[in-house]
Length: 65
Image 1 (cartoon, rainbow, N blue to C red):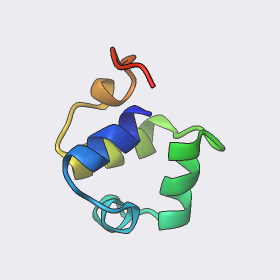
Image 2: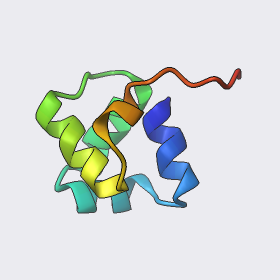
Image 3: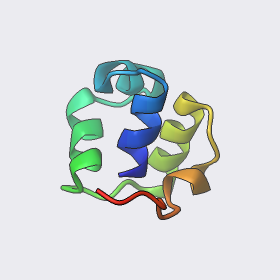
Image 4: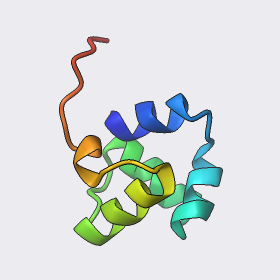
């Protein structure tokens, strides 16, 4: 949830994020859906691509919905 929210906040597509993080768009989508868990390394790549701290992707959101 946090990954999708952070990506949307930056108006970035899954494809753009995947390219910046050197991952496949299919893998990014699977992470966002919760079909797979990202390794610490992949989490770092995604955080770098989004310009956020890796912990920001792990924290629970205060939003409901």
